[in-house]
Length: 450
Image: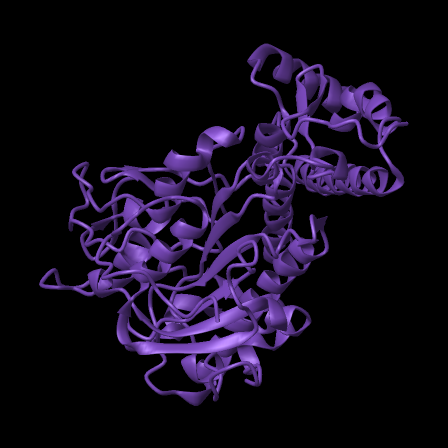
């Protein structure tokens, strides 16, 4: 095997109805090349935007001190293993999530504005209107470099019409991504459908055939690319073979977990011909979709993603952490200490799932760092305190180092009412997307580079 033989970054393992992209391998990087070529084969910068509903118990979220010596508050304690890989950003605001004369509907506005920084037109009809979201601005510019311009995932199904919050369409509460001012991109919540989209080829009849054969023979999608994988492995050095084995192993693990829940669903509901692969366990649902997002970034299938942990105003109960009451109901705590404690537990539960995702990203070696080092993961809510329904001093966490352009491991406090859109302008710049303004931005958020 000659390690200097290069492999194109777009190489895929192909089989019947299957196309498995490859992770970044050493043989995809030039041994000696012009600066322009080296830049073209360097690890790309990815961005994902994660939304949680109903605000946060801010006293248990906000670090007491600024800078790099802050102590993790209660909600963020589960993130201890990746403490040096994220920043807590305080002081950011979404003015367009405020009523601004439109009355109630803070939850719907919090989601609609989260990535657009625009005021949602108050309607529960077909004339929805808000603005383009940051993920779709990025996808329009860099999406041609990957198989999918972006992916939109979540755990709650959502209606695209009807009244979900005080006169606001359900489309506002259920979507983060807006391709145009009036066209939201619905998220996918079924892990099997996400998996098939990522690793099936574009020939619909073949993909259907593979599904039938997999279901009948209980075969893995990787069985259809085994020959291609074995041929490629012979061309790789030890380090690249390890990377490839780990990547394919991760794909098989996710597929096995999805299949397990499909089997359980079939046993519980035998009348369904093809049950969904949606786990009943919420934590597992969050984690398996997080794993799919990691695989999509690792295989460079996309560089842009959105992930709604739950829809705006979600009233999901959390009996698994001894919180049987609904989340939204608890968020209107009225100062009750026990309700606030339970809100903190819900917030910590979500942070625990975030920690799982970030640790998975950080476990994937890529270039001189990790997949997390080459990513920018925005996590937060469009509401500050759920009881006040305020949209300033939002709970925002930025994980990853943006390919070395972000000095992580800090708590940064910005001036009160700093537009959150300024953060998005700064992130777009790091992805090579020129955007002087976005929504109500007033410039680029400085201080991320240290």
